[in-house]
Image (cartoon, rainbow, N blue to C red; front, side, top):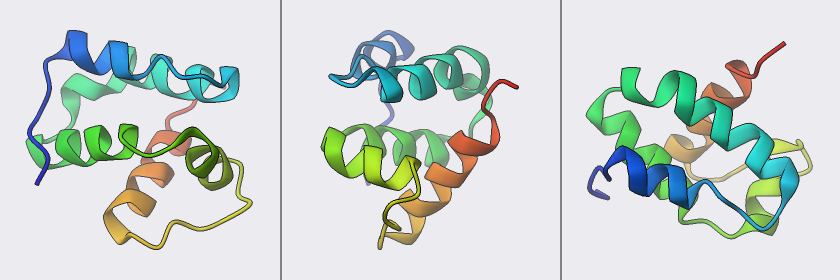
Length: 83
């Protein structure tokens, strides 16, 4: 299991090469990351280790992540988007 990063490192890892991902990740981290369980924090960090094109495809619904934990985290992040 990926270790839980400090919030500063997570914020830095959320800075992606795609604006669409920045818009999803940065608000999620600011508003919801601290409330996640350690296991969910580790899953989110693992999600951040994925490549941008892969993340984009999952978050935009073009593909479904085959890893059940990562797929659940995609749903969690998408479910907590600002209106």
